[in-house]
Image: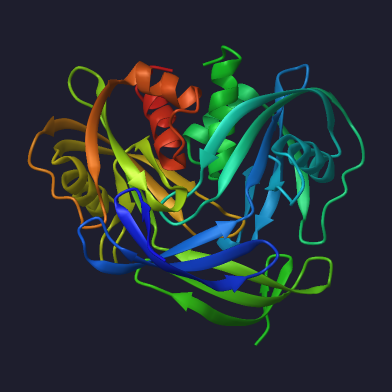
Length: 182
Length: 182
């Protein structure tokens, strides 16, 4: 096989690793400059992240220990889109699992390519409003604490680098722009 | 070995894959709920991304074919931070390689964790001003076209999902906030 892929030529592809959450493949390629090479591509499940706003304009964030980074971070509720789920269904499930919240009003805030140079992973962002509380049901891999912040304070933390997570950052900025608050 | 890592216990770790740009390891863990499991962690080189603004308030973006996503995308100049480089040195090198531009004035715009749930990768963002043109020197893996957009138009494209790349999006929003234009 040899397939064009933009200015690249794909010669062969092999799966290097797979677990339930991500796959890694290595492509044998001819690069745009005509040289042979390899391209390792990470194929995680896509992600859904939620900016949930209450009637007082406060946003629901979670304090969560992030294993790969080894630290506890403040971020928007988010999680993987499982097989058979739409991005919206995953967003609704993740918001309920991580915070207990249900939202009556959902609007898409577009997509983000998280690390396009090495990964296929997209995050689908949503604005959730008209919230009702409920009991959180975290997964066994999660230890979460809910934190409510006024949107302007969340944005100030995003500006200051106190929020690090890419989907959270883009979600907060896009939500504020969509709402006319930026 | 058995090491605490927040609410997780790390039991063992093995390297699954390595190429010059990324490494994948699989950790054997005890999860926060006490159950045994594995955690695959992607360890790419970190990234530097640049919002380069000229005297007319236009931002220098590049149209680039992004291999993992299979499409040509509009994004901020960016690239991997190589061993021995500071984030700023990588940003200066990448801006020159991808656009030919040199900047006399550099300011940090903080960091972004691109996919914290599965990856250690950070992107270091910079605002570059007082630009001087020069000849681009793309790598053999790159095919780039420079596009200048007024910052408000770049932000409108970021809002509309026409810019997908996470470091580009956070860089544009943070730059506009920092400059008092948002």
